Image (tube, rainbow, N blue to C red; front, top):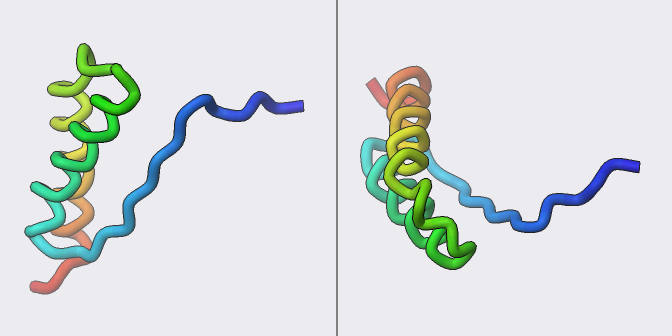
Amino acid sequence: MREQPRFTAELGLVALPTAVPVVRMFVADTLRRWRAMFIEPDMEDVAAELVTLSVQATGPS
């Protein structure tokens, strides 16, 4: 049987440029609640890059 994750969080976004700062705030807030601030800067950057690429690929032209 597969072990369940200890922590989960999710956020739905729309492919707009404003999604990037929203995901940064979401990641920062989530990691603070999980007491994982030591990875916050890196995870914010990773999430922002993924959302930026997603918006560029699927968002309005």
